[in-house]
Image: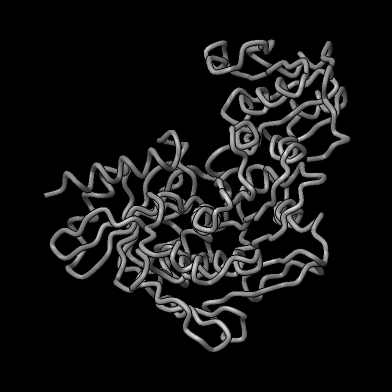
Length: 439
């Protein structure tokens, strides 16, 4: 906790009435602040706001004219650099919710970032920390907002903190004892002006680390010079500190874990997540015996290469969480069977050319759907058979008709879901329902 960070009697304006905003407002109230909450939605979005918070619905840029506060606490889903936020930022000090909460947290942080794999790795780290008696609450971009963690009766000694670029944009003092850099690939080009701007936001995870800290990173990633000790993992190079062929994990020439025998995780990308979690928790000082006991029987979260059903020798996998290029590539690369790929959704302005080699190697046919269906098909058909449909239901039924025995029907959309669904979870649940009804 930063003892000099005293907000008692200060006016804290919280932007965003979602879970993060509500938690930040409650924390600010507890610390003696005068709290207001602002959102572009109508009064209905404020139904969970704590008593004592002044609410402002239907927020527009015009409200900045008469705005006054000591600090704005920004929910991570709100674009820091949007004209709306910038109009208010000239009137008050701007701070992200995760940074704000970190000022009141006395424990230690294992911070996890990367374009893909963050949530699985966050869960794995949390599981190990809990087994070690450290609490290990998963929080940040996954699980609880960090502000909510600060409000629980027994605050954990350590947290597994998933950090998106949106949260890292606004950090100032947040300091992970161990940081994990899983991977980097272009994403969120609808929010960032360049790929470099997106990467620079994520690189801020190392900003406050010292030589006493540790960085866990994928071998070969470019992160520049960092102060902490660096430990690497890889599924491609045996020169890394931790290496996996997707089935076992090797550390210092010894097989330390049989992933297939001890967990329900499959694929090279999940092997990377496991290695990152093991390396981070070893660096944190947890004994190997505790780590491996915690990992035993672990199954991946829903919507991440989740096996929904096997029908007539065909596996149906729900990888709806694949909302960008790198996740799509990982989804394809992790399969050992021929793939019927279902891809599509919102057009985020990404260049899918890098996916073509993966399609050539592993995919029998691609079925595209949603807003981006035709642009995707026009590109993908240069290397593989393509079919275009309007809806996910049509895509699944077409996949059923063309998938040969021994293949995998993989929903790995490669983009976000907001053209037809409320989120990737909704999309994955709909896919699961459709698949369960096949006969």
